[in-house]
Image 1 (cartoon, one colour):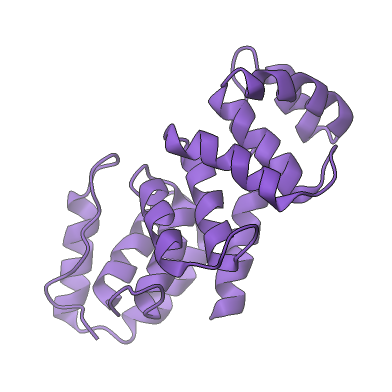
Image 2: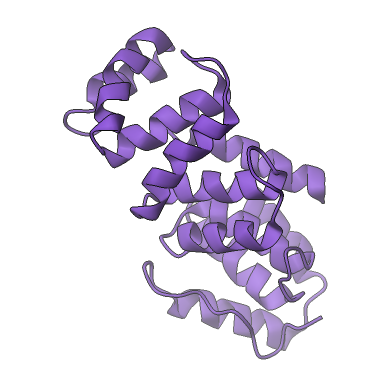
Length: 205
């Protein structure tokens, strides 16, 4: 279970910068995606210091991965947290991952849950997938709840997460028809940008 969760976090970190290119930021993001990390740093670092949220996230990713700069988890956390508190879902996911693994901070699964939930409520599929695992396996003080895990994996799978689809297929074999019905209803009713439920009616394990 822990290896699966860590693998999901690693995948999210690698993919986190792909959709970030915007006006005033495109050159740095393009350089990063082309693996020209020195140029990416030259373009991104001033933008990050001026408070550009996407640049803060990407600079944090560069420090996390050691791309164009020496690997530095404390700097990675610093820049990701700046973007995360301003609502950047990718950055919230990374901050959650760093609390989960204990990189640059004292390992704190409850803090990880807080940040994963913030990202998941914005429709971040990797955060939804990870939060589902935490419900499924009772991690970070989360109740063991197959219905909420199913709901989250349903949402993540709808956004294209194959891992979520596989996890959903596995958990459904352990669920009653009533639980499956509730999980389907919860995922159908939920809207991006609204709170995710913290308990289900039928899913407690």
